[in-house]
Amino acid sequence: MKTVSLKIDDSIFGETEKILSGTKMPRNRYINEAIAYYNKVQKRQLLEKKLKTESVLVREDSLKVLKDFENIGDDN
Image 1: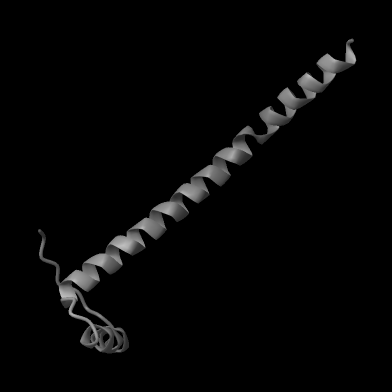
Image 2: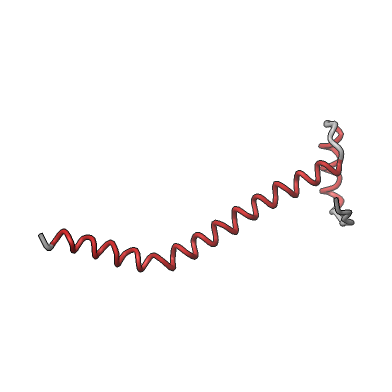
């Protein structure tokens, strides 16, 4: 496990302390879970951005293939 020193805004720290006072969860565990959750959200957003970019890249080819399939039916 790594040790990290960080500065937290007073308002965020106060809100966190209020939440933790109603639970039996240690502050360290709470912060670890919050970062893990945020990492998942960020990974999902990065994946979404990548998929949108790749979708734009293949859109033109996909439309060409679709048109080719439509033309196959016209030959009969």
